[in-house]
Length: 222
Image (cartoon, rainbow, N blue to C red; front, side, top):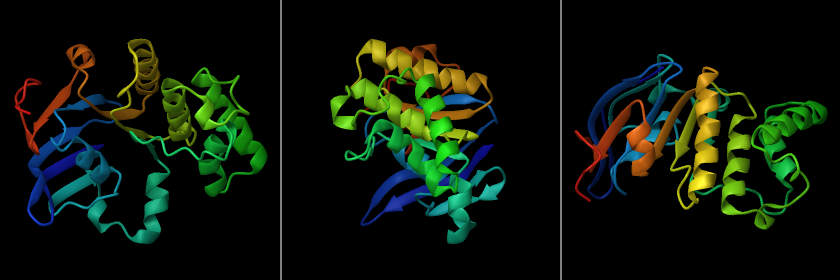
């Protein structure tokens, strides 16, 4: 589903975020991107989501070269993406339900259909009792689960999660990961960046990174 072909990404004046990276991710696979801060994890996720273009090489998603997508095609491409960022980017002046309904309304769903699907996504995240509350009344773990509900409400083929368990206690972190494992079991491809050593030790496949390059292990130089 995803292939990187000798991909590099440089930022001015002289920052090499990713250097000559090649790997593939199969459809329905769940993999971790691991490494210290600055290893290139977030940049890789942003390139898969077409939020950044590679400086050189090719990023292919479903056979499409992301760099060659026209701006008019990007909204359609991203409808099949569920993006979970470290900054939840929840709208603080809207209820939890309204936050999760918003992507559907933008995509052209009727308000009633958006309500049904958003309600189901929040129920899946065990938040059905929080529909009318506002983001700042929630714990960090609850806000993260709202962000996941918003990411999956479009029923995407691909979920990209950037440190989804960062700053969460172990119970909340496990709840978030259990949700991602459930999506993968349903056939959704999941790419997750993490530096959580306990989770990485249980992972089926990990791409280790260090200073923008693939590394042989989790124990990389900071």
